[in-house]
Image (cartoon, rainbow, N blue to C red; front, side):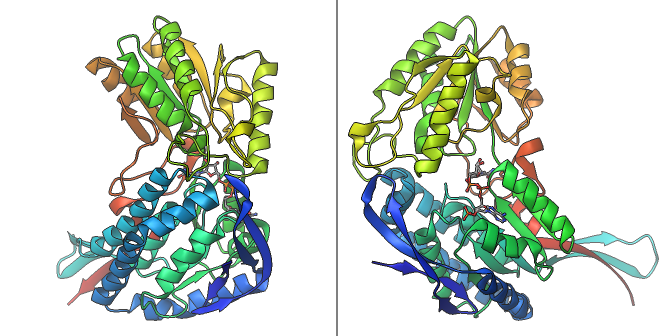
Length: 478
Ligand code: NDP
């Protein structure tokens, strides 16, 4: 049985052991994590601060080689890591393979991103003066991640942080120590100098809080819930005015127009709402449907949801895996009760699936007759639950789509170029999809939301550099 430990200054550090169970099979102990305390987190911060000068001055070719090695190792171990991910988080094996591959490719992408032009030169308005903007590393940064993409989201952050000369203290979600441990071990074995990359296992209020309140760190990149994100922002401002980047939740609309191909619409909605058990920040949790196709669409989505096979993540015929743990399952079921009390109609699902096995299984759930001001249409549920809302026309559909505190992802299914163009112009979201599920992203394109879904620069692709570097304007006279 593996025990996952923290990595500080190149050394593995033990702690209070805590077992981790497979959400598909509660008799399967995936491993133990040795929970660190605040002192270990402080030591990790110190190690990252001490290593910063070394890493910043490290030859670029060697930095590229290290990141490339990390990416290649992840890709070589895809099958093993994907199986572990399925056992730890409950993602279906095919989805887990995709996530692991994405993480490996992300390290390789950012290795080679370093060969792109860095900095800018300007003409100076003063004679005999040269003007340039250099991009310098931010410094030692804290990276705090959620459980739902336990290797891809850490990779999105760690790869550009290291590429651009920053040192890192990584705090993974307590629910997913195994993937964090394996990723850290791959990074450790890559030849990276001790202290450049550190990882601390432990609860958010202890380990995460130590990073937030440290005045030695220069920035925090955080992905997680809106409530924790607000706390991160306050603490960063209070403690050293650290730079912070927040990627938060969503209440993502998918509009279905009366000119849509309804098979495409049903495929997009089922994928967007239920794949990965709906545990995606980009999940289609509001289906806003033109009233002329409302009933025909509801028939398709309800029969589609009922036909989805819920089962263990590693079973080849499962289409929906388990909910991540008992707390999240209870939260999902609470929202089912809330939706019923608010007067929405439970058209599919809404209950546990006991016959799927000894795990946290829940049936894909569809509410119809939903008003956009109901809690089930405004609050992020983060489970396999979606709400159908009827709209009279495109204007009303876009107004409903925008009537949310979030703004992460939004989609439309339509065959009209005019409707698609209007939607892209007016919907308030950072990621927009036309005739595609709201949940698809590519690693070389920017990712992030608006309003309550985001604060700070975008992640991924070359936009990732904006958080991990700071521009310095230099004037030189000869
Ligand atoms: P949480 O906000 O609960 O936790 C996120 C991370 O913050 C975890 O590592 C957690 O640690 C840590 N944390 C908790 N409390 C503190 C604290 N006081 N100080 C510092 N760190 C703390 O989110 P979840 O893990 O439940 O993830 C689900 C959320 O993430 C959803 O809202 C989802 O929409 C969002 N998300 C957003 C994405 C995006 O790119 N926009 C992508 C994926 C998810 P621990 O859990 O160990 O206590």
